[in-house]
Length: 137
Image (cartoon, rainbow, N blue to C red; front, side, top):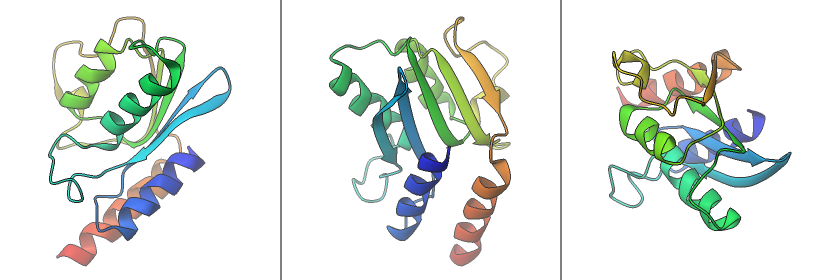
């Protein structure tokens, strides 16, 4: 999660919403990413989406069932859907997203075999997000 927070800080420096993601496979980082929605003028350029693409390119396949995604904010419904299609093995997120997080959906969104943990380093991730939005207001 430390590496995901580093990515979030990079996003903060680019005036992007500070969300970072890292995908690990068999003990090695195979993808690092952060939000690029402003930079790319693309509402789908979330950290998770960027990380999924990078990991699939690195691994040479579309399934991430042997991988763990560390992300600093609970994925939105769009990202959770992409993670389901990638059949992600494990999701670990820091801060919950009470406004747009996938867990607001009543239906199961992630792949049935995906293991989920939340709250790892939530304080640090939450502070980074609060600091970012305080500057915007």
